[in-house]
Image (cartoon, rainbow, N blue to C red; front, side, top):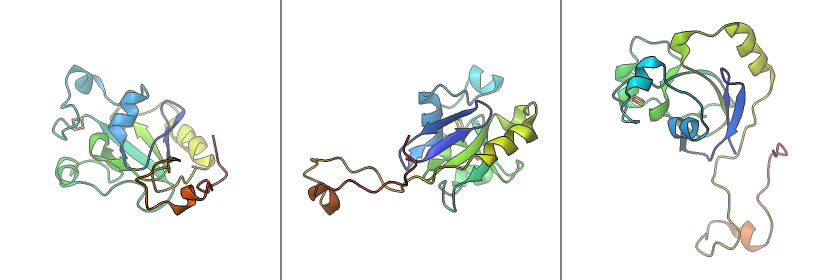
Length: 154
Ligand code: FES
């Protein structure tokens, strides 16, 4: 499973490949929004520009979906590494700073400490569910063999 490391919160959260970053953050109780976004946000439509995250590290190229057309337009005057969480799908592990517009006390040290811990690469496919008769693409499951993991379980 990909891991999203939230630097500000000091938390690692697992998600399925392809999950929406905003939805994972909200599900896990991670605060994405500053005051403006708390008072009102678009609910993930890419219109309010309040769900910023700064991408600090990726486990590899393509860890996140490419910037959408909405992001290209709305983030023109923002740092290159910023994304709109509601427009971003997580494919592999990443490290992000929520609410980067607010700054972060001891930010450089905290980001460096977070980068010092390796990110789990995570698989790039949804896990195979044993006994799923419709899953013709998973012959390993039919043999009773489990999908190989990276050894980074947990
Ligand atoms: S939630 Fe409004 S732009 Fe992301």
